[in-house]
Length: 351
Image 1 (spheres, helix red, strand yellow):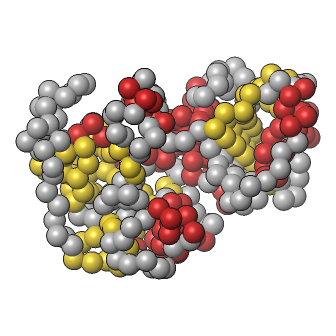
Image 2 (cartoon, rainbow, N blue to C red; image 1 turned 135 degrees about the vertical axis):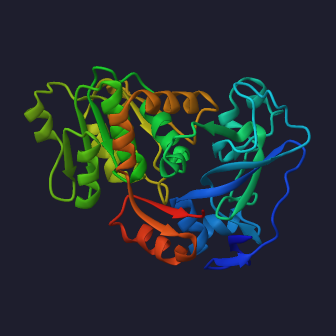
């Protein structure tokens, strides 16, 4: 089968002919139809310090995937709640494989499993014709779901998890960072019923995506500040909720500066290096800051599926984040587009 793999330590990837995998007794085999390209994949391709510390080549990469179930392991319960798993079903996959026995798993917090193994990082991933995952990681999708949309449920889950961390209905929301996840969070905030949504970035291309996703204002903070837009919207106190999606120290500072007393800040963006925070305003304004990682298994999956099922407008706003599509053989062009900054979500077609 075709597989995009890290064959040895060092920069680069190779599209190779790999053995077709066979599911273990508790696994499901998926024929991959679409796969989304993530920032994690860029780190792996360039072989930075993080990638060198996490991967043990050879390894098939990729963790955002959608496809068709083609084989079911011998010990997979066919009546696995909430549906019967059958060959021919379409599915996405949760990329975090949990241990099921650590304290967090046994206490109902599997999304913070201390022994998490990640698809495409610690085990073979979805940039291939076939991938095997535990049946508990399979998320069956409706037959009529757009395959492109099905391939980005993993990052959409990050956006939903972050956006719903604090109540936002009727509140004012500031989103820093308009990469694909930040833009999807903008669409979720708009769908859930935020009063005003203001997004920030330093890329005009990505700010325009945020506007299409429902932002009232999209501010290029390389040229402007956010405070004047608050006044224009008639906001007297500041934002009720902040979603930090960029990992930028400057973005977090501006977010704290523009939040009202008692606001909540959910942080998904990973900084490239440690940075100082002025904790005075955090304390005196009684701000709540919460780190976000991945998706809540599986509450987030239910919520994003149900929201998409009930809103054609939301489906279109999420789909608008996908700006580039390539065949699997064009993987180098796909990675170049993702690195350009002039893109949203990049999808590879493995069908």
